[in-house]
Amino acid sequence: MTCESLGFHGGILACDASCQFDAAGCLGRCGDSLVQLQFGETCDGANLQEKTCLSENYYGGTLSCTEACELDFTSCAEAGRCGDGVVQTAFLEACDGAELDGKTCETLGHTYGGVLTCSDTCRIDTTACEGFCGDGLADASYGEACDGLDFLGKSSCGDFGYFNPRVPDSLACDGTCNPVMEGCTNVLQWGSSAHDYASGIATDQNHNLIVAGDTVGNLQGTNAGLSDFVVVKLDSAGNTTWTRQWGNANVNSCNAIATDSAGNILVAGYTEGPTDGLSAIGSYDLYVAKLYPDSSLAWSVQTGTSSTDSAQGVAVDSPGNLYVAGYANGALDGNPYLGASDCVLIKYNTYGTRQWTRQWGSTGSETAMSVAVDGSGNVYVTGDTSGAMDGGNLGGTDVFLTKYNSDGTLLWTRQWGSAGSEYSYGVKTDGTGNVFVSGRTSGSLDGNASAGSYDAFVTKYNSSGTRLWTRQWGSSGSDGATRLDVDASGAVLVTGWVAGSLWGNPWLGGDDVFLSRYDTDGAHIATQQWGTSSGESGSAVTIDSTGEVYLVGHTQGTLAPSTGLGWDLFVLRK
Image (cartoon, rainbow, N blue to C red):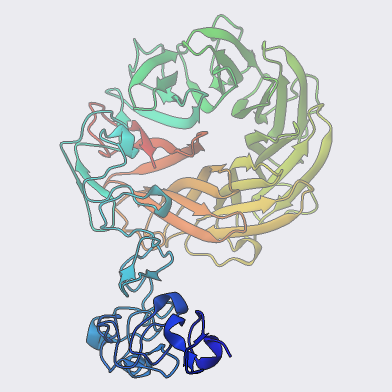
């Protein structure tokens, strides 16, 4: 026999003088009313060590002790406690373990989501929830520009995407976490006492804006004749760095502008008479000029036939070569003249030396209106034709897209249209070699419904010349798309003019300016419309390397305070 066999926890069993067991050396046992923790007892009989269901965090019940000297929580558990996985709202539990009583971060107002958890005290823990508009912490990743007094460190108009760098007259954050301010503007308007027109806009590597056009007034100095070339350089805050105005005693017009990687500025247009000391060739000649970033003239070229010719588009490739597109009413640089007006494409190197000239068309009349270069150096020219350049004419005037390689080898031409008339004004490429063409149509182009007398359109081709899609849109009036640009995602932005309400936007009178955005698959994303009761036109749009969008055009009204009269130039930052 041992102490253990007699029910004790241990010790030394002895034999007394009368040969009876002596348990005095044994160490106690379950049932002696003494709680011996060292032997695993948590209670003994009625001895619960002053513990109750409540002291053990249960909400009620009667604590008891088992015959094995272990606390019996059966009655306590029936009353429940925090941690049992059951939400007991009567005892102010908001959750219990994984049981969140149907709550989520979103249902608690954390609209940006996250993971809701339950604390050890059965209280909701929103630590892992994302924020929400109104929490006082601006979160740009969810599109918040501000929240409460948090404006993400921004304070000036320029910080918020407006032109002027001044501090707003007032600044607050609205209920949608967008800033509300006064004293800022996203439109610049300026002009002379006569008519001024903008035809193109480009940006450089320092985010400066360069606007091209022409004026019959005095924007910088004295007008040389009927109309002068104009180039204006603005910094990203909208301050004018310089204005260059030049020409001859007759008509001069900038039709397009581009910049190279060094910030040099290339303009293309036409001139009537000798310009920059060059010789006149015909009644109107193609004119191309390169300006250094400080506005000084690097070189200019005047070329043409004995008739009327014009440069309508200009593009620059990565080595700095220029491609100038336009039209000629005669044989240019020894090329055969096909009749009426022909398309022309001229390549110049960075020093203004002509590399080659291509002239093409039909027996009808063609006009090349815009040119673009892709990442491989291929050149795309778009415009309109009254003849047949690729198969038959589809009715009235059709549009075309022609692709050349950098050596001037013709790769393909595509012609498309409706039973009405189409005119193309813009072409751009994306990062994967797709090509986008913009213009206007009086018919139903590629199966699209006609909305008015003329509609805007944009068509996408791949690099092989396969037409991928066409989108056509407009008001009940006469509308048109001019130029376009493509962002890093492949979405296309198109500007132009509209003589009515477009996509539900209010029509402000005359012709308004619009900016439409389509994704790379042709789905409409958004359209905005601006104007006055007079008349406006959006001439071109460009996207800089940071994704800022700038739209240029001219207005007869007041989009922004201006001292000009007649038609003024404007730049809109979006």
